[in-house]
Image 1: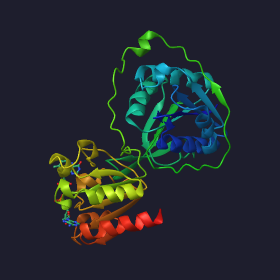
Image 2: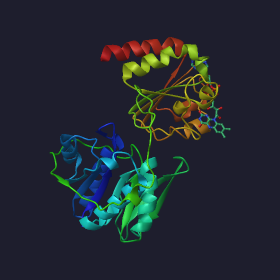
Image 3: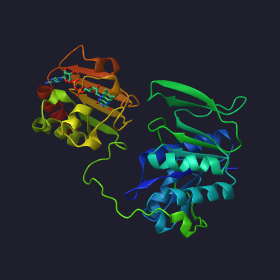
Image 4: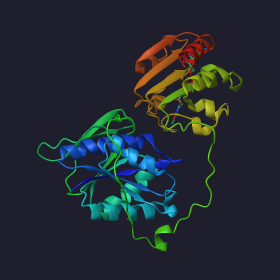
Length: 322
Ligand SMILES: Cc1cc2nc3c(=O)[nH]c(=O)nc-3n(C[C@H](O)[C@H](O)[C@H](O)COP(=O)(O)OP(=O)(O)OC[C@H]3O[C@@H](n4cnc5c(N)ncnc54)[C@H](O)[C@@H]3O)c2cc1C
């Protein structure tokens, strides 16, 4: 029995959230007295990057080198993962929570008759059963749930586990899955990607601006700080509603949910709907000229002052550190 970890790839790189899943999978495997096997689908990743998953805890890497799997075709991914799960004798599948893994694991749990837990934040407790803690109500509460079936699927919440790069490269084996045309009934014909920007959902650092910035013409101070920190940029809902910034930057309950190591909120009041999208951030820095702004209650660090005075100083300091 091994633990299987599904690893997602984006632009030829293992996604950061999947590295977290590999590290987490290795710890779960240790608990179970076994090892973690990572599985990667598609041909868009170089061999050395596959082997490097060993450094994060994978004892072995299975590679399904079929270019038809380069895009996340849900049905085909379900087929491959189900076959790998059965053939490796795994009882636990670990994935990083994402829109792709949400769709895949929902189908897999039916196919494998597996108990499924999503948004999991901690290692399982195996004292008299198998329970996991998961985040619910957009991060405002936790639930402890018991996974009773023999087969189990755990989708790890982003940033819930810090991967450690400490091991050595793992052996990579080819895994051949049996796939038919019916598994590719949905074809992605075109993907229009935003280029030249860090992906907000994957970013380690995010600098976000609100209505306090007064207008789109003032966004230079946000962009300069983001550039100096190598951070992605976000914004509050009204900012994107007003077309000051593109809609894909809108963070919050009705927008993107982020979980970076550092979230810098500038001129954002901290309405509950905004906080719902950022509460999983490891460290929140708030810059606001109103000392009573609600965001300060959720902040690890706060600076009371005018963003237009503070941001250039922060940017200069960040550039100096570089
Ligand atoms: C159903 C629903 C869903 C919603 N979903 C979302 C969502 O997903 N995301 C979201 O963001 N909002 C959402 N909202 C809107 C939310 O309630 C707030 O209205 C919104 O977040 C406020 O945006 P803001 O903080 O940018 O603007 P404001 O509330 O206007 O705050 C601006 C802040 O900037 C500060 N400021 C002004 N000048 C400066 C300066 N020079 N330097 C520093 N600080 C300054 C002010 O003190 C103030 O705190 C939703 C609302 C509803 C009803």
